[in-house]
Image 1 (cartoon, rainbow, N blue to C red):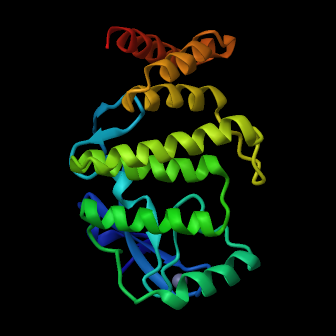
Image 2: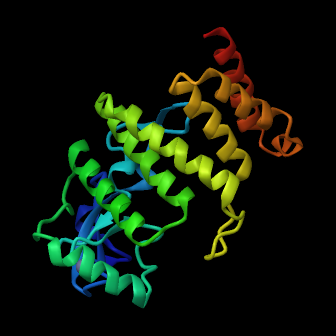
Length: 234
Ligand SMILES: [Zn+2]
């Protein structure tokens, strides 16, 4: 088979393709499904930025999991494993892992298992709170797609993590990635609104509206004004 950058040519017509990876913890090679981005058709987007697509949602496949040692992380962070991380993962995750694969087609429940493991690993490795918040937010979204009330519990966890990050973490993390302050404040407003915390929602939305930087994000400005009005009418 001809393998071009992880895409197996014989499966080009499919919505999913196999990506080949080498685990940075145990060095085993494995394949995991990914959604072909070029085939995606956006249907709608929730106000806390969950996107819905025709067919598969790429969210379901965005965490890779090594079937051999149980290491799981989002695609963007998968290879960032230091020697210290590796030692911790071998002790805390690999030693307790019973080998199984989530590299094929995933149900929503499979995706929830994989994301929860990535979230646990993020806690063990002491990720930035904003990154842990993003994982918790993704878990809340998966429960929303499933129609499960557990969504609320994970939105609440997300709120606490985002809020901690907003007040305590520096704008630029150790890897040099800049956190989007205004988007984070908007999300805190919207998540509080969804949790029924009307006063808190207003506080965050007002902060975003009065921030001069909002002028550079017209889409976000439109959304925050919309959600502010919605909160007032609730
Ligand atoms: Zn591994």
